[in-house]
Amino acid sequence: MAVKYVFVTGGVVSGLGKGITAASLGRLLKARGYKVTMQKFDPYINIDPGTMNPIQHGEVFVTDDGAETDLDLGHYERFIDESLTKNSNVTTGKVYWSVLEKERRGDFGGGTVQVIPHITNEIKSRFHRSLSEETEIAIIEVGGTVGDIESQPYIEAIRQFQHDVGHENCILIHVALMVYLPASEEMKTKPIQMSVKELQRLGIQPDIVVCRTEYEIDDNLKDKISLFCNVPASHVVQNLTLDLLYEAPLAMEKEHLAEIVCQSLNLDCPEPDLEDWKAMVEAAKNPTQEVTVALVGKYIALHDAYISVVESLKHAGYNSRTTVNIKWVDSEEVTNENAPEIFSDVSGILVPGGFGSRGIDGKIAAIKYARENNIPFLGLCLGMQLSIVEFARDVVGFRDAHSIELDPSTTHPVISLMPDQEGVTDIGGTLRLGSYPCVLDKESKAYKLYGTELINERHRHRYEVNNDYRRNLTENGMKLSGISPDGRIIEMIEIPSHPFFIATQAHPELKSRPNRPHPLFVGFVDAAIKAKK
Image 1: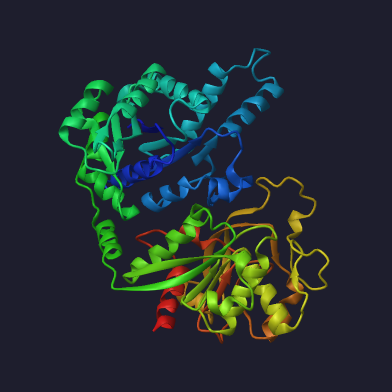
Image 2: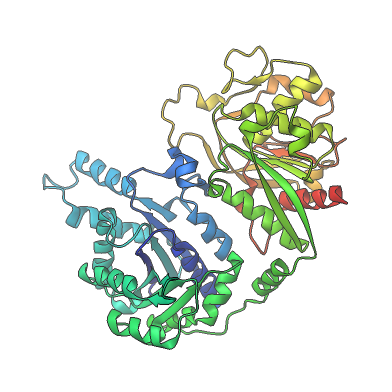
């Protein structure tokens, strides 16, 4: 059959949950046996989010093939449990870059390059690039809101594309805000009406309207939206705020979203197999215990900067019916002197990835406190590098040990620049990115957790452990528990004498799933539970 397309747009305000709506639909369609893929189109002019400040944009999500992408792709992967690719995140920057490269080559035969047709044609070509031979349904989210000047080329491309492939193969879902006025205790539909009218003005008629709301929407309101937005009342569905993110697919199933989509696309709609998802949600909503762990970072003002880490901790908690409470610790405020007070109420300490010198001393102090006080510790990327620094300083005795990224003049550069990064000047897209293999020591805790010798994890780094210091580390009690297959890169370390002290150069948080938690996070949370007892 021809590939079916579902476009998801948003209106009134950003941050409504378009991505969660799209991901929930993906889960429901996959549960019905369909092969689903997802894409995110971002209107910003950056090539990718790799150079953006996490405080402004949140985490950079990395795919297996090494693309730095929007955090919504993390939601997609967690919900549909499929690995996405570099073609799954498209930005205006990528679109214009491609068109301008073609212009420079003379591909347009000397013609004037215009938004229509050249930019819109490039956008339309991207709708196909994420598809595999097995793909049956593609769900494509357009970032921002309808009416944004940046979004207009995408809306026009969708209009053309629907005409090209036929309405029976391409539908549009519009997610818009249902406003509640506390003063009059009224639900107001006018913002939704105006948002849909803007879409219609641009030549698109939505097939389904999803109302993002804090309160239940009754039939009268649905009828009103139906009348003014020119959609059947049965195609007006609510997306209520939920206590648990992963309830969203089940809530959307109650609203018959997948059924409406299948009907609109002339697809069979068998009963979904959601038993494992329901079991996960039930475990998440009915914990039997709780534990508190500290997340020590410098971007804690925006929790989305560490969203995959946060979700991975939650997933691990679901595995043991445990609520994992996160104590957000600003690394700039941690010292060796106040660490006992800051961490007095936690049963585990996690230091995530990051860049730059701000807050480094606090992260090292947190690692030292975890190591010396037998508190379960998990270090990710920079968290592993700083674990090496702390160990070299306080155990090996190299008092000025550091990463050359942070102290180029150190006499003990235990963390050095990767050889293939020498001479690299561009900062965007030039790190060691994507999935790489690692061989685990069969005598390590990591091996016991993974249950296999050869693993693959995603990476995003430019610096690595300096191999000149391997002997210094191992002779003083550190185990190099994971090494690249060629023996060159130290990928994982642990301290065998410690109850749980593991750090990895990778970003395992990027591969955790709510119904399939990552083994390192499961091990960390389980160790924290034991420490609490």
